[in-house]
Length: 182
Image (cartoon, rainbow, N blue to C red):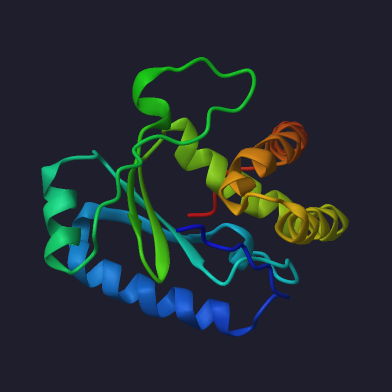
């Protein structure tokens, strides 16, 4: 069954929805969760997005304890264990591996210090700091969602644009000394 992609204007309720999911995840994981962050388009004020909250859980290791804790709390693991590899990165094993749980929220579990853990936070912070880039990205997503004959190809078409933003974000991080907020 093909799922349609619908992009909607930014919703103020997304922050509250993230906080509710984060509280549930924190209760399930306890000290296994080193941090729980709102990531993705719903975390950027003013950015149009799919109506799905993305959450990043940072853990010391992607291990059975994390998997069991989330499964016991009712989160279902999906067969997707790697992130898209942006240009300029070689497949360096654990740097792009993750656990992924999909439901009302998309839960991305990544290892502390891994390239993909940093990527999600840098991408979010860059778009928050650059509203014009955020607006252009939102318009791209709206047009893709409206114009793609195969909605399943949405991530494949969107990834190169995300890479362009990420490469600009890396330059911004180097110029500003950006580090993920504690």
